[in-house]
Image (cartoon, rainbow, N blue to C red; front, side, top):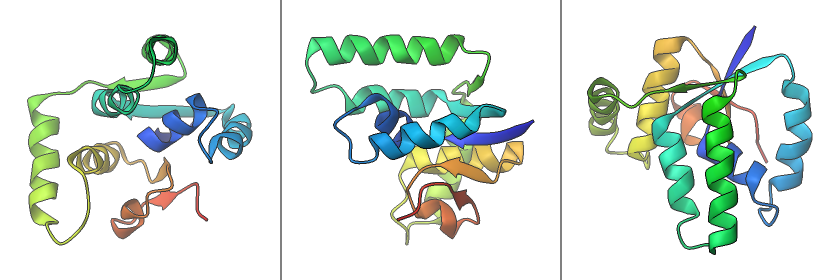
Length: 137
Protein backbone atom coordinates (compact mmCIF):
# COMPACT_ATOMS: atom_id res chain seq x y z
CA UNK A 1 0.00 0.00 0.00
CA UNK A 2 1.23 3.49 -0.85
CA UNK A 3 2.46 5.54 2.12
CA UNK A 4 2.31 9.32 2.11
CA UNK A 5 3.45 11.67 4.85
CA UNK A 6 0.83 14.17 6.07
CA UNK A 7 2.31 17.55 6.99
CA UNK A 8 0.69 20.20 9.17
CA UNK A 9 -0.28 22.06 5.98
CA UNK A 10 -2.51 19.15 4.94
CA UNK A 11 -4.29 18.76 8.28
CA UNK A 12 -4.77 22.51 8.68
CA UNK A 13 -6.17 23.00 5.17
CA UNK A 14 -8.42 19.95 5.53
CA UNK A 15 -9.86 21.16 8.85
CA UNK A 16 -10.11 24.89 8.23
CA UNK A 17 -12.80 25.88 5.71
CA UNK A 18 -11.37 29.42 5.64
CA UNK A 19 -7.98 28.25 4.41
CA UNK A 20 -7.28 29.08 0.76
CA UNK A 21 -6.19 25.45 0.14
CA UNK A 22 -9.22 23.88 1.85
CA UNK A 23 -11.23 22.88 -1.22
CA UNK A 24 -8.21 21.70 -3.19
CA UNK A 25 -7.03 19.55 -0.26
CA UNK A 26 -10.55 18.18 0.26
CA UNK A 27 -10.79 17.24 -3.41
CA UNK A 28 -7.34 15.65 -3.41
CA UNK A 29 -8.17 13.77 -0.21
CA UNK A 30 -10.73 11.75 -2.17
CA UNK A 31 -7.87 10.27 -4.24
CA UNK A 32 -6.17 8.88 -1.13
CA UNK A 33 -8.58 5.99 -0.51
CA UNK A 34 -5.92 3.27 -0.93
CA UNK A 35 -3.19 5.30 0.75
CA UNK A 36 -1.81 4.89 4.25
CA UNK A 37 -1.04 8.26 5.82
CA UNK A 38 1.88 8.79 8.19
CA UNK A 39 2.31 11.78 10.47
CA UNK A 40 4.02 12.50 13.78
CA UNK A 41 3.19 13.70 17.27
CA UNK A 42 5.19 16.82 16.43
CA UNK A 43 2.93 17.55 13.44
CA UNK A 44 -0.17 17.18 15.60
CA UNK A 45 1.39 19.46 18.22
CA UNK A 46 2.08 22.07 15.56
CA UNK A 47 -1.49 21.72 14.26
CA UNK A 48 -2.98 22.30 17.71
CA UNK A 49 -0.64 25.26 18.21
CA UNK A 50 -1.91 26.87 15.00
CA UNK A 51 -5.43 26.84 16.39
CA UNK A 52 -4.46 28.17 19.84
CA UNK A 53 -5.84 31.66 19.13
CA UNK A 54 -9.16 30.43 17.73
CA UNK A 55 -12.38 30.32 19.73
CA UNK A 56 -13.37 27.36 21.92
CA UNK A 57 -15.75 25.97 19.29
CA UNK A 58 -12.99 25.67 16.68
CA UNK A 59 -10.46 24.39 19.22
CA UNK A 60 -12.85 21.65 20.32
CA UNK A 61 -13.38 20.66 16.70
CA UNK A 62 -9.64 20.43 16.13
CA UNK A 63 -9.19 18.41 19.34
CA UNK A 64 -11.83 15.93 18.11
CA UNK A 65 -10.09 15.76 14.73
CA UNK A 66 -6.71 15.03 16.35
CA UNK A 67 -8.33 12.33 18.48
CA UNK A 68 -9.83 10.84 15.30
CA UNK A 69 -6.38 10.87 13.68
CA UNK A 70 -4.87 9.12 16.70
CA UNK A 71 -7.56 6.44 16.56
CA UNK A 72 -7.59 5.97 12.79
CA UNK A 73 -6.56 2.70 11.16
CA UNK A 74 -5.65 4.70 8.07
CA UNK A 75 -3.15 7.00 9.77
CA UNK A 76 0.04 5.98 11.55
CA UNK A 77 1.14 8.57 14.07
CA UNK A 78 4.82 8.22 14.86
CA UNK A 79 5.47 8.91 18.53
CA UNK A 80 7.78 11.69 19.59
CA UNK A 81 10.96 10.33 21.16
CA UNK A 82 14.30 11.69 22.26
CA UNK A 83 15.79 10.01 19.21
CA UNK A 84 13.37 11.71 16.79
CA UNK A 85 14.12 15.05 18.43
CA UNK A 86 17.90 14.55 18.24
CA UNK A 87 17.73 13.35 14.60
CA UNK A 88 15.65 16.40 13.69
CA UNK A 89 17.99 18.68 15.60
CA UNK A 90 20.95 17.23 13.71
CA UNK A 91 19.36 18.05 10.35
CA UNK A 92 18.35 21.48 11.65
CA UNK A 93 21.96 22.08 12.69
CA UNK A 94 23.24 20.92 9.30
CA UNK A 95 20.86 23.16 7.36
CA UNK A 96 21.28 26.54 9.07
CA UNK A 97 21.37 28.08 5.58
CA UNK A 98 17.77 26.95 5.02
CA UNK A 99 14.48 28.15 6.50
CA UNK A 100 13.53 24.71 7.82
CA UNK A 101 11.61 24.52 11.07
CA UNK A 102 12.57 21.89 13.62
CA UNK A 103 9.24 20.16 12.96
CA UNK A 104 10.07 20.03 9.25
CA UNK A 105 13.47 18.52 10.07
CA UNK A 106 11.87 15.87 12.28
CA UNK A 107 9.39 15.11 9.49
CA UNK A 108 12.18 14.83 6.89
CA UNK A 109 14.20 12.50 9.09
CA UNK A 110 11.10 10.38 9.80
CA UNK A 111 10.29 10.16 6.10
CA UNK A 112 13.86 9.11 5.27
CA UNK A 113 13.80 6.46 7.99
CA UNK A 114 10.49 5.04 6.70
CA UNK A 115 11.36 5.34 3.01
CA UNK A 116 8.51 7.74 2.28
CA UNK A 117 9.09 10.10 -0.65
CA UNK A 118 5.72 11.88 -1.05
CA UNK A 119 4.35 14.48 1.30
CA UNK A 120 0.99 16.20 1.56
CA UNK A 121 2.30 19.74 1.75
CA UNK A 122 2.88 22.91 -0.19
CA UNK A 123 6.19 23.58 1.59
CA UNK A 124 8.97 23.69 -1.00
CA UNK A 125 11.60 23.04 1.67
CA UNK A 126 10.82 19.35 1.27
CA UNK A 127 11.80 19.43 -2.42
CA UNK A 128 15.22 20.71 -1.37
CA UNK A 129 15.73 17.40 0.44
CA UNK A 130 14.52 15.31 -2.52
CA UNK A 131 10.91 14.73 -1.48
CA UNK A 132 7.88 15.14 -3.75
CA UNK A 133 5.33 17.67 -2.54
CA UNK A 134 1.80 16.85 -3.64
CA UNK A 135 0.49 20.43 -3.59
CA UNK A 136 2.41 22.72 -5.90
CA UNK A 137 1.23 26.10 -7.21
